[in-house]
Amino acid sequence: MSIESLFVILVIGTVAGWLAGRLTNGGGFGLAGNAIVGVAGAMLAGFLLPGVLPVNGVTGQVISATIGAVIVVFLLQVLKRV
View 1 (cartoon, one colour):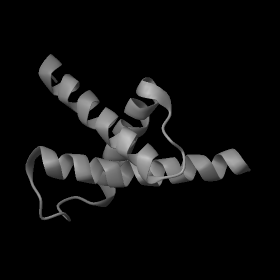
View 2 (cartoon, one colour):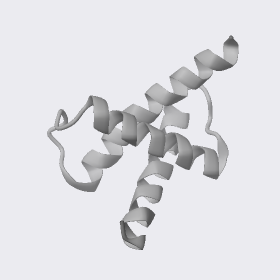
View 3 (tube, one colour):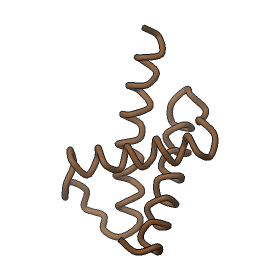
View 4 (cartoon, one colour):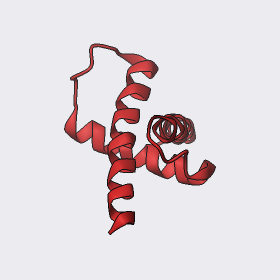
């Protein structure tokens, strides 16, 4: 994996984590937390939703990663309540 690929993954993960924080009641986890949640969400969405969205490119990746990040944020909120 090249440096550019890693940078793109981190940027998309950060955007997806930020969007997930805004879509849920969480409000975000800070820059590093958003990146971690977004990357985890992107990996989850890549596993659960491969090729489901009709949108390709960076926009499709951000939407897919955001869906996964919302799932991760929801799970984190459920675990936080327990």
